[in-house]
Image (cartoon, rainbow, N blue to C red; front, side):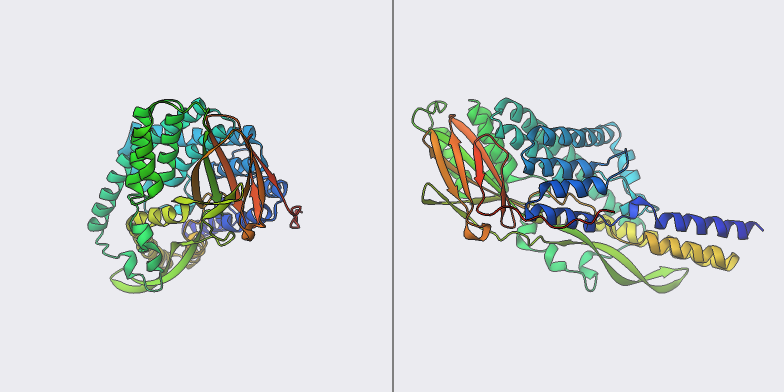
Length: 467
């Protein structure tokens, strides 16, 4: 009687898992949301986001996405409110790590729980880009003091991440040795190894430090007259992205400047263009021979892969007052995402293979006692099998900048024809200003005080089917 009862209970659990919100197709949801944003229908994108997040207990991803959507709409106050909710979640994560990093690593490294059912804590580059985007919101309102606070938090966050990841990677190596797992991602037949071994990915110092974040820090400190803090920001940016003339020149100009710019001979303007969407995470299934109960059993396992966004063509030049101005790429979310996956793959391989072996042994023994229970476990395993595909999808992919000196007054920026040749009117009235534009598809967004987008065509909404 007991085995039969156990089998029924396991079957019920399997059925419940099938409908669990943890197994939602997050990437499909955000494809629909991003399609609305690409078409210029920000309200439609926000409507879809709310439709897919009806629970009172909103997660980190909801606030990530909502902040970026509201920013595109020009609601900087609403964007900042959403991102403050996200920041509180990241702060709670930081506190847990600082309190007992060993306990945190043990929980994260658990082999019993599939990665996609864990509470989403955000990738390291997302945590750092959060405070960077919050700083940009503040700079859009010329709040350099507020941006300074966000930048300081970015630096502190990087330090917490650096210490934790050093310990995590060492622990992953130890766990792999203790379980006899020698498999590497390069051994996975059919896996797109070249995407993780791309020179741009391998050339990154880590997955979370952005040359743009540090260059922005240098610019803010310089604007506030804190040259002693501006220099390390520019220097760190140059180390993260070597052989970049813009970064080298920032240090030269800082050393040459006798005093803070007063705006009498022109304003220092940092034009920031953020394009496209962060890449998607997909799940790829690969058959592997695993030792289960003294036999090699071919088992299909799932691993994450990065799918690049293709919504927006890359460009590196704009026109300002009729003159071509080159842009310098300082950040690629795609490269950071791939570097994060490259660094995480040893741990993912250990957790996935050990979990599959344990599950296979348990199912074999359960089949011998109660075939129904074994079937139920098999169903539950099939439902839960799959890589975690959650990630901050509305986050911009490329961040490009141009630093120019402009006279106070109105100026015009013209974007390439691939973006509809969009015209943007700039109003320059301060010694230092940051102007941020977001390009997606052929749409251009800006919510700041200094920029007004003059669209050539009205946005075309994409139909939304909401029951």
